[in-house]
Length: 398
Image (cartoon, rainbow, N blue to C red; front, top):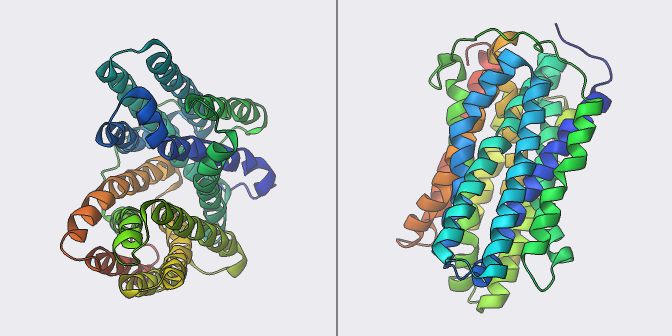
């Protein structure tokens, strides 16, 4: 049974949770360089700790989805946000101890990796249970719009995280981390006070696993993997393009890369906010978004000026802003009400895999030719076109 009452008010807490947790994840990445210098770690070592968060996300997403179907959406969201805040504080204390007491670099690194891994484990509860809760409360034709708002909140967090770091930066890079670790705490109280009980709460009975290869989810899972891989490719190569193709010096290249990715984030938010107003089916959103994204990647592959490259990136980001909520909506519409958490967990796992795979693939291909990673991104962006067309013609087959 779908609850159609007071959607935006009742779901505002999960949008807020998505935003602040994304802020925390991205804020750490923005501080990686200064933090590494303060702790005596290399870029590769601090990169390992950043990657550990993605690994935890991938490994836990499906388990959280299953828990959301068994225990209910609300308790899983509370455990996820509460755990994320707790492990973020552990990470901060580890970094502070390393900087203040001169602990061995390898011991500090081990602590950072463990804390980031645990943060990824708990963070993955938010998209898994959040999308399942949206599926509970919206009819199939309205899910894409609500999932777009959820995704827009996450994208806003990805933008606000680095901005928060800049605004709170001081003599020690650990201070912004402590402040970011505290931001989920008031959200946790809001969730506990405002998030209504859901239809699955209290079920508590074992639920069967939903295989990642389930035929109904094949299209959304493949699309999620391909789309997020393309995003990861774009993120990793933009700095190299600024250096090599545009010929910018190091600091200027860094600022250009940040500006281009900020343009992507703004376009992503704009697109996801418009999803509900368009009233399109998820299949139409996915196919159109895939076409826009592929066009943006093609333009970026051959862009020779800074404005052209930024515009191409923003264009691709706008298309992705339609693809991602459509993925979640198609997955939700393909399964029954009792499987929503597991379906959302499967999609989240694919997104996490893509986030880990994209930078590795993009970096390897860039050495063979600067246009090759973005051309691969364009090819990957054609997958949503085919899946979207198939979803429009056979809406219950995925």
